[in-house]
Amino acid sequence: MNATTQGLVCAHHHLYSSLARGMPPPPRTPTNFTEILELVWWRLDAALDLESIRWSAMLGALEALENGTTAIVDHHASPNAIEGSLDVIADACAEVGVRSVCCYEVTDRNGLDGARAGLAENERFLRAGGRGLVGAHACFTLSDETLEAVCGLAADLGVGVHIHVAEDRADAEAGARLADRSRPEWLLAHCVHLESDLPGTIAHNPRSNMNNAVGYAHPAARENPIVLGSDGIGASMLDEFRVAFVRLRESDVTATPETVWEWLHAGTALVPEVANDVVTWSYDPMDPWYLAYTPGVRAERVEIDGQVVLDGGRPTRVDGDEIRARAREEAERLWQRM
Ligand SMILES: [Zn+2]
Image 1 (cartoon, rainbow, N blue to C red):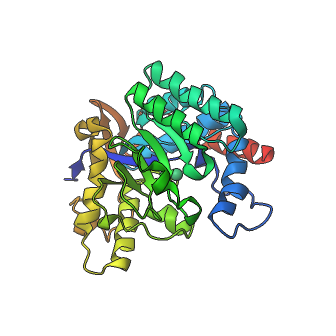
Image 2 (tube, helix red, strand yellow):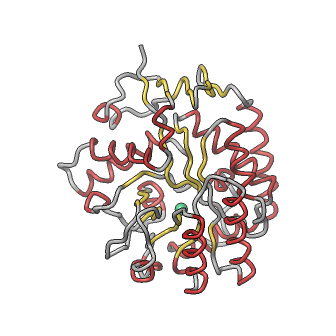
């Protein structure tokens, strides 16, 4: 008899990065966080069109489902295909059967028109009934005027802001810039170099932070609710749980996996319906002390909203092999445009 749990939540994802794996190397090797953005991610997101956004979201949603993640809180950027991009992502997730909470990352890095278009996409999507937050990239790419516009739009629409906060030293001023702006309903990704406290839920992304060598966020020392995100590196939240645990242990050998298990389940507050989703796993027991040291645990069956969307480890609504094949073709097209 295999164990069941509720659905898991990936509280900070970038579905658009699903097609990045294996892409050609950048023109030179990035040596710090800002260069990683400039040489890798801002070249990739500029090359996205609605078709590549669709297949990266389909692939990301499929991988989430296969790992028992029934809700994705996404943070999207595609500066040359902004309008309609959030519908494409929400529709792709719905087609696979996964819940999504979308936003478009507003930024000034593509000029005033780019910032306005990003704000407009958040507003268009949310006013049309889409589920989401207002997205913002990070304080270091936002003017005060644009940041005010983001806060104003979120307040008008009664939702929080989903923003990267002090991920790297380059964004160390975020704490001061957001001090009078952040609200409890905001979702603050990373907070590695945040020295003050801000209201909001902190999305901890340990694997991504190690991959970018930005430092450790020390989430256990915060008073905020802590949730776990992948920052675009898949959506296996049990995997992220294990990485989060071992990284916590590295800083405090007395720490227990129960702390990280709480972070994983705190994601439920962002998408409460996942409490009714039922995931049957390839393993028993689903206990943090076992799972912290057991790699390779998979979802075998997933029921979302009473519908079986994964059975025998395979999606029931879509053809997983076809999604992987189409995603591979789209990745080639995307890399050529870069
Ligand atoms: Zn991120």
